Length: 362
Ligand SMILES: *Cc1c(COP(=O)(O)O)cnc(C)c1O
Image (cartoon, rainbow, N blue to C red):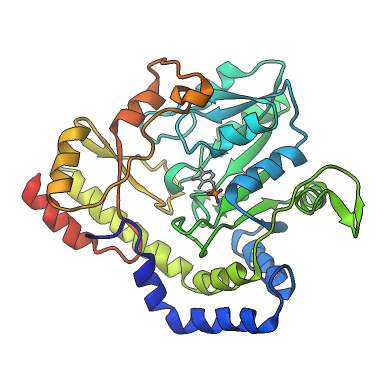
């Protein structure tokens, strides 16, 4: 069976480099913090073109830390997209605040700015925008709404580290659009480590200091704890692995994009199946290559028969989840959850083979 994300082939391709880097950390006796973390954070800053990159324990922890740094508390409302992984809504609720679910654009599947506008109340503090499946959310319009209503934007780029938006002023990378942005280094993300890992990004010095303090037990001076924080950090070993993978990252993204283009061409002629629309100016990382399939069950039966792996990202809108009350409201997020299906697209996937198999069954 073809793996959905081929981490084994990726490791084989960079094996010598990875083993050298891993051994150096293990022999150094320095496993938490240290020069390799500082070096990796610099590398992230240079890559994105941002002032501060701060590593932490996971994408989910990064979201919680960001919300704490932004001062979210009980009674506050935070607008989150209704169609995404649960983490953004979960972290808002975890701090006692209320996630308010915005509908999505039925074509790009990104948060709908019209829906955001309609949900703003006096209690709204900010917007979490998710760069879903690897393309950036509509930040130009979101920023206008945020400015008019004195809201912050938290960019969840867990799936989109390396994505670009091309504007008249040139290209700008994901993780630079939010007042604070986050990403995840979970193994199957476009840039993944061998366990959990994450990072926060900001151009704001005060937020950066606050983030460091919160992630370090609310302390900015040894054994002095000014506020209640938590413990969240990236291991040195993971940073070393990520540094190696970063050397190959742009090349991998180019292959992902080529793979996606091959799928686009194949599905262009098929009725009842359309790929997630990539908005003008956006370059996706294709964390997932996602299709909207009118008759998904039939399509799945055929994929099973041809032994082609797939994932359903995501089988329900967030408002349908039991923890959020499970009420149906028949919006575009629900429709997407009934039609969405993702195919393997990573740099070590033989997309020509998969397309050939599909040609015989579709
Ligand atoms: C993966 C993901 C997260 C969480 O990242 P972890 O590192 O797994 O905690 C958050 N948001 C989105 C959109 C994700 O895809």
